[in-house]
Amino acid sequence: MTRRTQRLGSVIQEEITLLLSKGRLKDPRIHELTTITGAKVSRDLSVATVYFTVLGEEEDIESTGRGLEAARGFIQRHLARHMNVRVIPSLRFEYDPSVAYGDRMNRLLAELPELRRQDEEVHEADTKDVDREEESEPGE
Image (cartoon, rainbow, N blue to C red; front, top):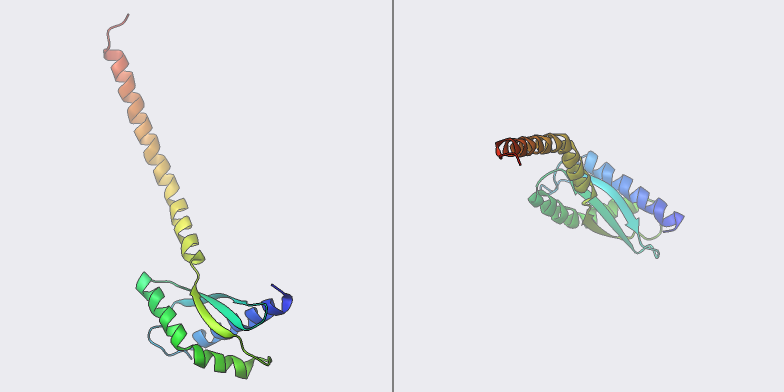
């Protein structure tokens, strides 16, 4: 990725984020808790893959993807008016699972102390059972 493609991707991300935050994308399929997490532009500048995440259910993700695809023409016209480039890359929208993955990891890490406590309780109960068995067996 060249510096130019990175810069162009960053500007695309900012502009689409601005459209979302100002409510300019009025498609009801686009969930209100949608975030643009990045934009990666191809080397030849012909395609920009825009990554998004949604704080919601699987159906919200799919719906938002369809809404963004439907708004692609509007978004590209907006980019053409607000960016100083000769050709606007064709936009593709792709769900970014990294935020959901990070959220899942945080929840699992938060559960660790409870799981550790439960494991210690089970271990203590097993140790007590073994001690009782040893006490009840006749000595040799």
